[in-house]
Amino acid sequence: MHSIIIIIYFSLQTLLKVKTVGYFMHKTNINENIKKTLVAKFIGNCGFCFTDEVDCLYIDFPYVSGAYGFMSFDARHLEALSRHEKEVYFLFTHAHDDHFNRKEVRSQKLKTAGPFGIRCYANNYITIDQLNKSGPWHITAFKTTHALCIEHYSYVLEWYGTRIFISGDTKDISVLRKISNIDILISNPLFLKEIVKAKRINDFKKIVLCHFRTKSKIAHKTHKKLIVPKQGKTIILNA
Ligand SMILES: [Zn+2]
Image (cartoon, rainbow, N blue to C red):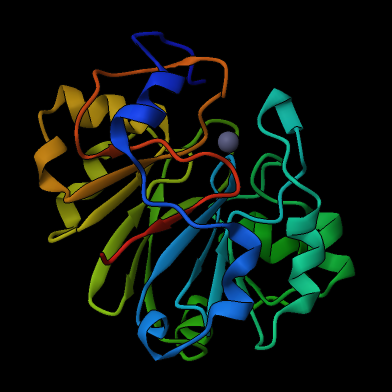
């Protein structure tokens, strides 16, 4: 997926002036002000760590680095999993290797939620309801389609009043008919292509692109709302 070419990725980085901070700095920077700041740290593919610098929720991480020719990631992201001061949680859209690393999830007994494939493989599985009782977030799962996948979920993640839609690997935007008032769209390139085609780009305050290939160009025209993050960087979501 993600191969149609219109604009150049690297020029976007400059144009969009993404607000970023160093990934491994957050533990030393905790104070009252940034506790309320919600950020998403981009690890690679659809892998993010959402955090208010106290609680952490990973989405589609850990995955198998470099699976199917998609992004590999800095190994320090894996090492960081055991170094969090508070318990962290893991939510997956589906069980394909470029989103989910069953070996890591099992060996580290990660507290893991997600659809059917995840339920089969995780050895410390929790339901979305249990996940919602475990942190300051509220997550709603939506069954969406993805090729060669028994079950795939997209999610609405609500945290400090900010509503975020996470597409995962689906390209079917009809799921958005059931959902309103989304502030931030976290989208794969094919889902975004459909959003652009349906002229719905203005439904969102910000759009964060993920699961793109670093050397490819992006499947849509540039837009001031679009953020194309560099791996390892942090996007402030509720600024
Ligand atoms: Zn994928």
